[in-house]
Image 1 (spheres, helix red, strand yellow):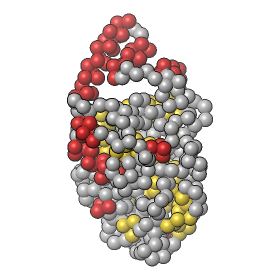
Image 2: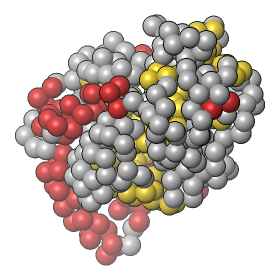
Image 3: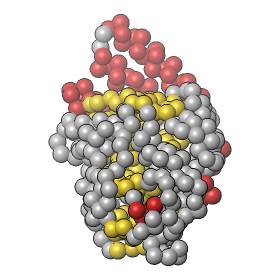
Image 4: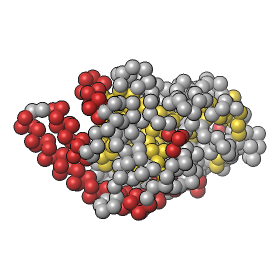
Length: 407
């Protein structure tokens, strides 16, 4: 079983100079700003070692590079090694040997990883029908202001646009078969899928994506348009365990309001129940009822936008002090009636963040040796993306390839 992410909340601080040399000072600061208010560690893609973005904006875990070269310089060195190995193996027509040597070009340490006994076992699984590759290409929309976040679920591309959620109280529990999901397949035994690696390119510099499992969504309806307190009874089916040592632990689950279809009226509003000082209601990791701190909405939130004001630099709704995840949403309400527009409240579970420090260049990121270390992806996972707070308002196009392997 993979090491639970919550165990790293007291991890050793990452060497700041090495991290800056690897990602660049601007990108390190941007990721810190985007995640400082989140309440749970998030694995950082593309940083060899085991680095996590931590609550408070710091980074924890060992970084295995960054002393002498940047990420881009290292990538060029690795690619030269991989091409040389590929050319030699192509002559011998040994595909498996080629894959093994490509891995060795990046890292010589062929040790046990996650629940696999060795990298040989990972390769054997991937090449024997338990591997999958998922292409994606999504075009976002322009943000209202720098610092806004966007939900790519309903955006055009591959996979095709996902639909708005069903009405309260039931809502929708999306799966890998839901239109809009990446199409993850259950290829191994129960709940034994793992992230392996992905390649990501972005048309705008310094944009970052969060890969997450979309586990629940419900349309706000009258909670938005007439400021009516609205109960929610639907619950997710993944990440519902209250036991912190379980892979299915609620810890890390987050909630956010996103606009699926119709721009909101230019009405100032907060997400609060009963009064502007009382946040919406949810069940926490211990299944206890809690009130969210009030979340400031975005006047005239565009279609595809996350309904959080840019001043908060946030892509999620905050939880009560001490809470580390949301089991279910139980009540929705806007502090003011927003006469027109749509909002879905969504619960997700983070998989990882991938940053693009260079525009229109494929960023190769690894989940085998870095902090992800074959992070679990559950059966029927509805994989999707969130644009983290944007450094520019420009609509951004993303494309890439996500690979997973199952036991």
